[in-house]
Length: 261
Image: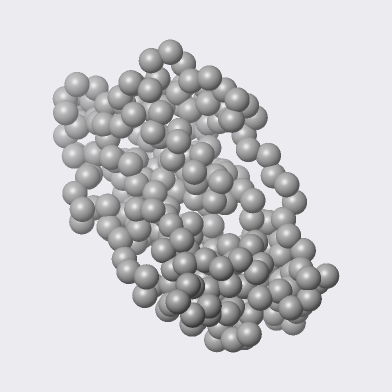
């Protein structure tokens, strides 16, 4: 896990608690320091206010790259609805407001990993998607997909033949905190069909969408991927469920900071 947080004390507290839950944590106090670790991280926890560049600007810059799919959780004291919407629309997969419970942070990180670590390489006829490399090809030709198109296609290909409602796809691909309507799914499905062909993603009237694997012998799924060592078995430290991380803006833990972080 990459933790981008310029408050040394808060960073150490978060690293300790998520480390106890089985995560290996790399700390970065600036946007510049985070960039070098971004692509090697399984998940990123990102503060909004950083000394060299706002975390949101860093997120937009990384998401602008082709098929950047590293899951990102924004961790900030900026809790207004407008802030949450801006963070999610900039590419965050989840958003947690300070002060927060360490147990909730760990639970949200686990949920992000469940949505992302099982996606690997899928082949259905001439359509191929490689999540590790962030590439999708049709008949050997590279497909230019947006990040959400890529993630939606990967999720559907990971469950061939299964029908998903629009709300289920919103929850699994966009995240449960996504602010938007089910029409978002329809728009992305239409865009995918224009790129991979209308026959690959079927509409099940009154229910939702299904990825069609016409030849099951040509459809291969992901390899099994282990969660972080000890993640499912580790016992939370005593009192962790009641522990609340400081907000960094109430004067208790960060008396010298007043930027509303």
